[in-house]
Length: 81
Image 1 (cartoon, rainbow, N blue to C red):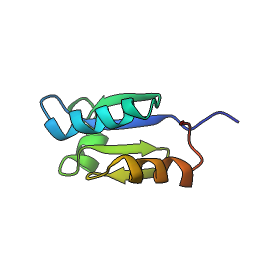
Image 2 (image 1 turned 90 degrees about the vertical axis):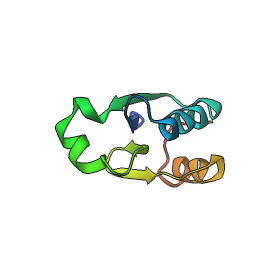
Image 3 (image 1 turned 180 degrees about the vertical axis):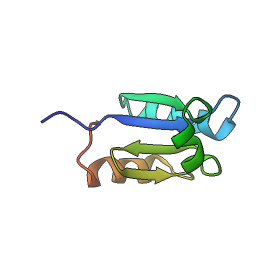
Image 4 (image 1 turned 60 degrees about the horizontal axis):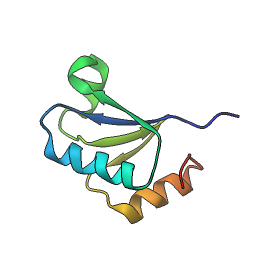
């Protein structure tokens, strides 16, 4: 079974999104960044919530820190260190 890919819903110029990306990088997680402006469905769903970390149909909404990020990864048996 393959790991559920992590997606960081973000947009250009969002300083909170940059903080979230830094947390993911510090955890050495593999993830992709999706700019919600480029995806009408993501824009409608997350425009007032970014940054949001998605894994399938599970979401971790900002604000999150290293501990809540680790808990999210462990709780959903996602990739991670």
